[in-house]
Amino acid sequence: MEMEIDTTKHTGRFPQMIIYLGKLFRMFIFQTDWKVLPMSAIIAGLVSFAVGADLFKTMEGTLMGTFALSCVCIWNGFFNSIQVVCRERAIIKREHRSGLHISSYIAAHVIYQSILCMAQSAITIIVLYYTKVTLPEKPLITPIAVLDLWLTIFLVTFCADMMALMVSSLTKTTTTAMTVMPFLLIFQLVFSGGYFSLPEAAQPLTNVTIAKWGLTSLCAQGDYNSLPMVSVWNTMFKMKDVEIEGQKPVWEILKYAEQNNMKEDILMQTASYNAIPDYNFDPAVVFRCWGWLLLWIFVYIAVAVVSLEFIDKDRR
Image (cartoon, rainbow, N blue to C red; front, side):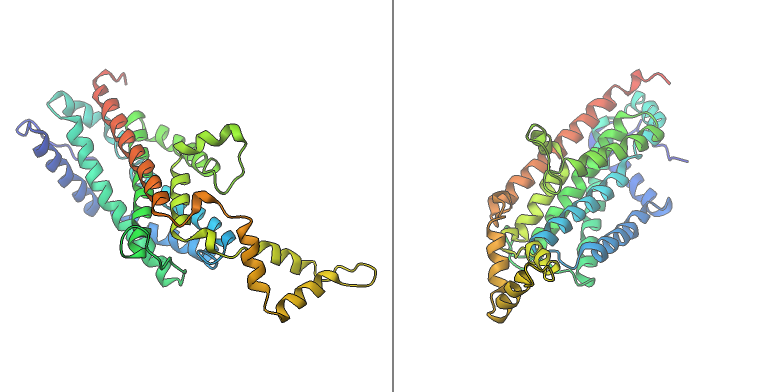
């Protein structure tokens, strides 16, 4: 049962925000909202087990791993707040008529969710570290590379969280919110613009996805364009037994390259033909990604506030 807050004696926006913030932390402790933290650790562990071996080691492994890591962040953010507003919509409606400032209510959620996302991001980094995933060693923005990585993971998680908060504010029931969420998640994954090939006409849609900016920032921080590309070599190795007129030319090429220590040169040369300028190891790339994520965070918060301002017109 949701706790109701008496705001009649606290008409100021700041006092109301503090009261609701206290309510949210009590719910975190007493209504088991803390379960999202161990869940984020479990999800990060599963992703690390599945795709962590080549993350930040090869081009292919980095693209797949950063895509999966972005999905983890979006998943965590969505589940943090997809139901938090719509499940107590009737209470909000009554308290709004009694003097509740919607901006105070949303501000309390924003602060609380930001702290939650910070903790989840730290847990994700810790899990990656203890599962022996190779983490970036060269910093781009701050003096510590891991801090750069944490900031990106936090912004992606928090942006997804604020999108879910907006959806929760727009929908009237938890059932509707949970129905909408899978479609949002699929859209984020398909239109990330990095992992799936999209037609030219669909490229502008990637700018409205959280996944694109998370994946791009993580690839840039992992110095994607300086990593070897192994798919061509691995494909050739699978073809090593192919015979042409009694000869095995592919095997001869591979053997010659290895005997003359040319393998690494071939991997790096292959990578140079597949470099992506958007993933350059450049602070401007990361700042651009962070800027887009911050822009969408503010948009989602603004929409949430405006939508709840009309809560008195609900017909239920």
